[in-house]
Each structure stands twice: as C-alpha cells, then as structure tokens.
Image (cartoon, rainbow, N blue to C red; front, side):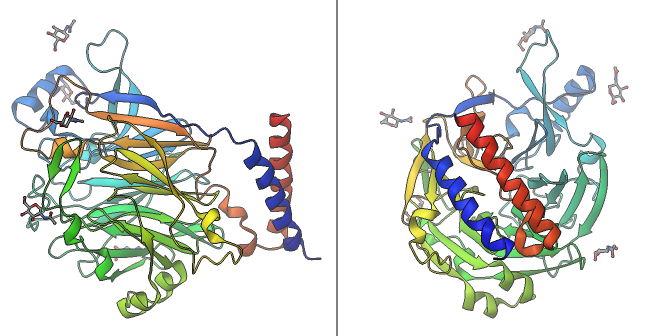
Length: 448
Ligand SMILES: *[C@@H]1O[C@H](CO)[C@@H](O)[C@H](O)[C@H]1NC(C)=O
Ligand SMILES: *[C@@H]1O[C@H](CO)[C@@H](O)[C@H](O)[C@H]1NC(C)=O
Ligand SMILES: *[C@@H]1O[C@H](CO)[C@@H](O)[C@H](O)[C@H]1NC(C)=O
Ligand SMILES: *[C@@H]1O[C@H](CO)[C@@H](O)[C@H](O)[C@H]1NC(C)=O
Ligand SMILES: *[C@@H]1O[C@H](CO)[C@@H](O)[C@H](O)[C@H]1NC(C)=O
C-alpha cells in the first residue's frame, strides 16, 4: 500500500468525525464599523489642509477589499471617487481620548506609497491576496490617474496596472511586475479580484479578474509573464444591469467578471459577473497552458448553475464550500459542493444546486469582499455601494461601512498547501501524513 492510499481514508474519517460535531454559527458579529472612513494622519494640521484642498473628501472613501494575517486586518479603499488619501491600509485602534471612530485606517505600507500621480506608488487597489504560508501580500494595482471619479470612462494619462509582492514579515517589497498594455489596457480596464495558485510548493500564479475589459488575467511569477482570456460569460448580463438593494436601484451596471475563487487542490477556478447570476468553472491547467488562447478557454469553460442573485466577492474554503456575496438579499450564501458532487466525485460535472443562506442582515448592504482567517472565521466587508453610488451618496449620521466575521469552521484555500501530497516527494508525503494525524488528534481532544 502506498502512503498516498493511506492518507485519503484518514482524511475522510477525520472529516466525518469533525462534521458530526460542527458548531457553525448562524449570526455574524460586527468587528468594526464607520459612518465615515477615518485615517491616521501624521498631524491634524495636514488633515485639515488636505480637506481644504480636496485631497481628502471624507464621504468619498468606501472600504472594499479585506485580507488578514497574524491578527492584522488589511483593507482597501479603491479610488472610486476623488479625495481618497490612501488606497491600501491596515486597521489600528484610535488613540485613547480621540474624538472620532474607535478605529482608523493606517496607510500601508506608508503614506509615501499612496501618492496619487506617482506611478511607482499605489494608485487604485481593489484587492490583494495574502499567502498564509509565507506572509507575502500580492497587491493588485489597477493604476491610472485621471477620471478616478468615473470608472466607466476610458483613462487617459494613466499609470499602467501592476502587481507588487510584499513580504509582511520583513516589510520589504519582494517583486513588482508592470503589465504590458497588450494584456491590461488600452481602453477600459479594472483589476478586481485575485486568487493564487501553487506549483512545486510555492505560489507561482496569480489569477485576476478584469471587470471592465471582461478578461481573466494570468500572471506567472516564475516566468515573469502574463496573458489574458476573454469569454462572453465574463461580460455584464443585460438582464441584471439594474440591481436593487434595500430600496435603492443602481442602473446600468456594466461590471463583468468580478469575484473569483480557487479550489484548494488548485485544479479549478470559479467566477461570476457582478451583473449576472451564472457561476462558471474553468480548469486551472487550461489557464496556465493555453497562453491566452481564448478558443482553448471557450472549449473548456463550463457554466455550472445560477446563483440566487447577482453578487460581488467569493471565497472557497478548504472544506469544499464556496461562500459568495448575494447583493439583493443582503446576504452571504454557501454552496456545499460535497453535497452536489454525488458518488462520482467528478468536479468536471458537478452542478450548483445545494446553495443555502449562511447569514443575512439589513445592514449587510453590498457584501463586497470575503476572506477566511486562521481560526475558522469568514470575514467580510459591506461597502454599501448602492448608497455610495446613489445621487444622494452616503450620509454622515449613520453607520455605512461594516467589517463582519462569522464562524464557519473552514480554512483558507492556501493554508498548508506546501504539503499537498500530489506535488511533493516521499518526504513531503510523510510530513503531510503526520500533520493529518496531529490535526485529527487535536480535534478529538478538543471535542471530548
Ligand atoms: C504634519 O505632517 C507633515 C507630514 O509629515 C509635516 O510635513 C508637517 O511639518 C507636520 N506639521 C506639523 C504642524 O507638525
Ligand atoms: C469632537 O468632535 C466634535 C465634532 O467633530 C467637535 O465639535 C468637538 O470640538 C470635538 N472635541 C474635541 C475634544 O476634540
Ligand atoms: C519582469 O517583467 C517586467 C515587465 O516586463 C520587467 O520590467 C522586469 O524587469 C522583469 N523582471 C525580471 C526579474 O526579469
Ligand atoms: C434598467 O433600468 C433602465 C433605466 O431605468 C431601464 O431603461 C432598463 O429597461 C432597465 N433594464 C432592465 C433589464 O430592467
Ligand atoms: C423600502 O420601502 C418600503 C416602502 O416604502 C418600506 O416599507 C421599507 O421599510 C423600505 N425598506 C428599507 C430597507 O429601506
């Protein structure tokens, strides 16, 4: 008997045991909230000065992206309107005795890197991914300076899109890659979501959604190259271009492919458009081998079903659950993939059927980005873009932006992936085996 044959049954036994004792929550907790997003400034004089010259317009910041590492919470404020002073931030407690919000956004890694108009700095960051095994943050910067306030208008004097890999443990930039215009830009473009793929035990690929040019972009770190795929199912679906959230209707949403998710074995990527309900699946091996050949993509992509409503972000947990934003119902839904796999266990045929509401709340307006932490919690932002983009905009006297968490007893898709048996040697197999036994024992001990 090969070692690999042993590992699987142990996993299954351990998994079944864990499931019987699940204590998954049904209510989410608000971790942070803001009426108006507030930043940590070097001093109040500078803050007042920036308000006066409109470099800081307080009601124009909406928190969108979120990722976690070693107890820190990183958030993005994409420059969707003018007057956003910092696009990538870490949340800190406000100093004692201060007058405003209990928590502030501290520009990350610093103020210098937020400088608008300096193409070396970050211009418009919607998303990042943090590799939990290395502490590398992959920061996606769509770039461009002009027409920040109007994402639907073609940028002119633009900074090119780039991806920066930043080591959170040593606070150093590890790599930066500027996308060629043939891959991202010319015309309309907006880099939205990112997932990573491992190869030979390290993160090698970044997969990105381009929401306004309707593309799935691949960045290959090892080869230092990039290419992109297009398909009609990445576009905005005419039927869903008007979205109503809590009595507010946004019309003419042209946002296409947005939320993307990676399976923990790195074999499949899932994606959806904001304006649309179809959930699509593509094999990662096609993406990494077809070098941007959209015909090869079209031959392999599969629409696996329809979500309950249009949505924004999604996250795939290591226990084979896909969590996703549901914009109309102010909710997060969960697709329990194991239930729909059936006895064949064939991911190439699995349909989207078993979707259930994980949580909903009238305050969860525009569930934006989802992230799993190290303790079984699913964190998410609600960015209230329905109100933010309405003619009235957000108002100061009520909470607009929330960061929530809910216990789901699930694990980040990248967690422990250096130990995926199929990629490693005998040595890796043995250590994986030991790891699983330990995890089983630990669970057994905590449950009894
Ligand atoms: C406020 O901070 C800015 C930026 O660090 C600095 O240039 C300025 O001198 C400071 N002003 C005061 C009054 O401390
Ligand atoms: C607290 O904030 C309010 C409203 O912005 C302001 O009127 C008041 O003076 C502030 N108090 C202190 C102690 O800063
Ligand atoms: C990777 O590609 C970028 C953009 O083409 C280039 O600027 C950079 O020098 C390359 N880096 C390496 C290490 O080859
Ligand atoms: C979306 O809203 C616009 C403006 O109100 C309207 O003209 C259009 O028919 C609507 N489309 C759909 C599919 O409901
Ligand atoms: C939506 O409008 C209806 C009718 O005016 C009202 O009863 C309801 O409270 C509103 N809901 C929200 C979430 O504002």
